[in-house]
Length: 115
Image (cartoon, rainbow, N blue to C red; front, side, top):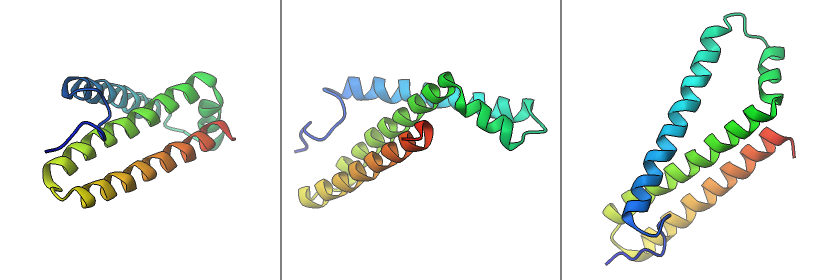
């Protein structure tokens, strides 16, 4: 029997809702970037850096980064509980995923905010 100790939310419903909300955030971020690329055919380094120096874009990117991590965690938690039945293997897999996602978010914050 799988317990809720390692899942992201308090219930399956909250995980389901979080998965949908993060998907919408990632969709909006992707559409914005595609629109930015299409709207700037002569995109250069100065335009790109100016976009990411804006505080609103850094916040938007951070929101997308955290959404990506949460979305990935919920998805991989679900896959691991469905397909990795031995508890030890499942917990090791989830620990590796959690550490990788944590490192990804920390690295992204450093890139976005120049910490």
